[in-house]
Amino acid sequence: MRPEDILVPTPAGVCCKIGGFHIDPTRPVARALITHAHSDHARAGHGAVLATAETLDLMRLRYGENFAGTTQAAAYGKRIDLGGVTVTFHPAGHVLGSAQIAVAANGLRVVASGDYKNVPDPTCAPFELVPCDVFITEATFALPVFRHGDPDGEIAKLMGSVALFPERAHLVGAYSLGKAQRVIALLRKAGYGAPIYLHGAMEKITRYYESRGFALGELRVVRGASKAELAGTITICPPSALNDLWTRRFPEPLAAFASGWMRVRARARQQGVSLPLVISDHADWNDLTATIAATGAGEIWVTHGQEDALVHWCGTRGLKARPLDIVGYGDEDDAGEQDGGAEE
View 1 (cartoon, rainbow, N blue to C red):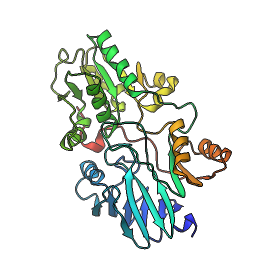
View 2 (view 1 turned 90 degrees about the vertical axis):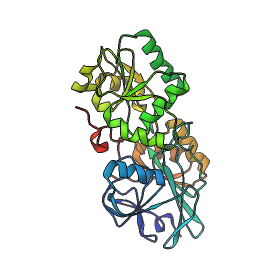
View 3 (view 1 turned 180 degrees about the vertical axis):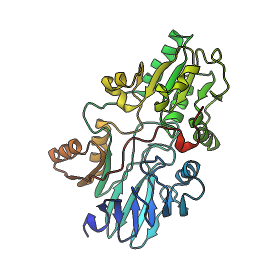
View 4 (view 1 turned 90 degrees about the horizontal axis):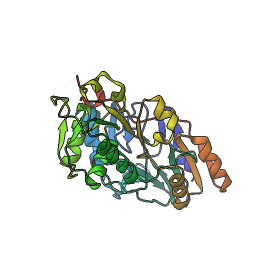
């Protein structure tokens, strides 16, 4: 059996014809297996969806109760037989509920990573290495320039700026699912005990994290707070809000942005970011290449990002590699509209 007999790239995403499903399809399909709830991977309108319980919950929060015809929750490590293949979900370390999906048949195993990172994150299960024959890897930051560094050091920069400018409000742009909650948790880990303010777009998902047992300290919604109350505070907001009229309610707002893209200083300047924080929920170049090697896979399929550079690296290591060229994956959404929390 060849890998293509188990999974094959199609315009709608990676498809398992034997099992009758797609993984993270980019358009509605009869049966979808979803790696995580970011909107470039998790779309509404499928006939049936199989995902972790947290991913299903987050999809309901974002799209409503009827986002799919039927749903089924998958527990990490539990074998699920679909047609002639066996499927297992494994932690991806990306965001709450994120999973790698392993598909096996006739002694051959293919693992679709979805988005992943293999550094500690207090808000999700840690990445699990899954040995396989074929590894389908993301490549969001698959260039040698991207080395994310220490997130605790970036949080220290933020707290240092708050101490240096006690009269200013610090606005931290962060994606509403995963990054926002991770930044809050890292602030608490660093000893920041003051209330943290939330843009309305952040509230629903952040409260869900709290309901799952994550202690995030005192959180307040910006709506209704006076300008004087917001002096010296930290507010977490969608990146798109940093250049919005919404910022006028804050005293001397200072814009920060938590993203792996902040490694590129020109990008930070273009977006008007005064305090770039290199905190990413994706693997950087070193972690991508180390993970590929550690899986033991002899064949690598690359998707979602800088595909050519990683394919080239694989070739220099004697690994068979190919880009999948699937259109439809990109940055996680950063706007509150999908979460029903846009602020006036």
